[in-house]
Length: 348
Image 1 (tube, one colour):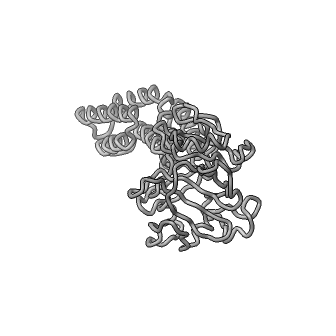
Image 2: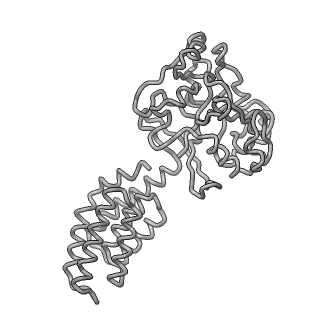
């Protein structure tokens, strides 16, 4: 997660050193010299864990120290709060801050709590939107609990509109139809706006061929990836698609009305009737159309939305994609030529 490194820039260690000195130098109830030494060692190890982004290990060390001491202490909660922030567990961090207040913190720790609370607000913001450091574009997000892993999964709620790889290398923009067709033979990555009109970018994002998707430099921002076929299945299963439909290919899959649940509502962008569109989870699927590999032409804006996956079919070696349309609530799943231009989402 992008906040874990940033948290370590907080000037926490000086405060911890002060609190740690008070903890180990003052006489504590039922604490032998050996126990004091154990607590000091656990604290120092927890500090090292924090520096190495080993959040759970730091929590474990503080729990052990508390068990030896027989009660909670300010130093334990300060360390715990930073560990919870590293884990991006906002609720646990807020609870830990409340415990800090119950332990009569001094001004130095209160200053640190202010920084903790600022970080909590940044983390909350990161749950609903993400700013791509490559170009400053901000994307709305949605999340759900994965049926397969039980973890919270975050997706872009908008199509990717990036023109550079993760490492900053530019992705070639191809406007000429014949050059787009030639990219098939050259197997070169490329992107374009629909109809080569930049005004389509902020709404529909860019159309990428699959060579851009598969490039080793990474199309999605750091910490994100292009969804795999399994990532899409996970989303479809969460929204109510039957397990027996997940692997159906070259056909519309109607169970659960999942296509309707993924589409943006109304007919501002979708052609009428935009059947059963509810945008239930906030995917906000739009009909960005596509660019053909055989003519380099642009077709079906308003009719279809098509998204690449990062997965190749095992038998044919062609990439899987997903499709939504305006006339029913199905999700189309198929594999097709790498040279078409489709939309892309990112997931983490």
